[in-house]
Length: 211
Image (cartoon, rainbow, N blue to C red; front, side, top):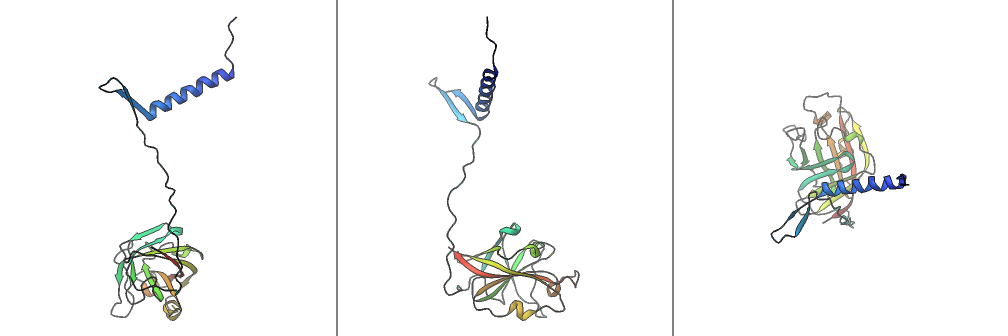
């Protein structure tokens, strides 16, 4: 009497077929000039890097020398911005805004990020900084500088200020160590939008430096 194939036998056949199909999908072979079979992978499997990120070093004096900022990253908002532009003041003494909604700029009349005082990076509140109000205390902000360093700040406050009552001294005033202000268009930076929209300002303190 011929024995019937059980569940275990069927499972073995199915698994074997899957392995064979996978092997065909991943590898192909041919015979070389010497008659030996060559096997090469058709699919390169990704290899995850295990290299740790550079350690964040404290800044004992709470400040660095001046250096032009070149890039901005705000992981919590998915922002990774390069090509920061320099922003001066217009004839009325108001900080200029970047030329388009997808560009951020740094104030040339404020300290550079990492130097003593509150550095300023601004962008359009309807564009690049459209979600700035969602930033929460504790979020990390990183700024690349032309001297090869990366300065990292920690957000400690996010506020929206009305145009008519914008507290300039509170936002731009001197600080005992390096700080950063991320500022949206609107209010005193408004370029024709709702004058009541005001500015969203994220306040951040220097946490350390890499590089």
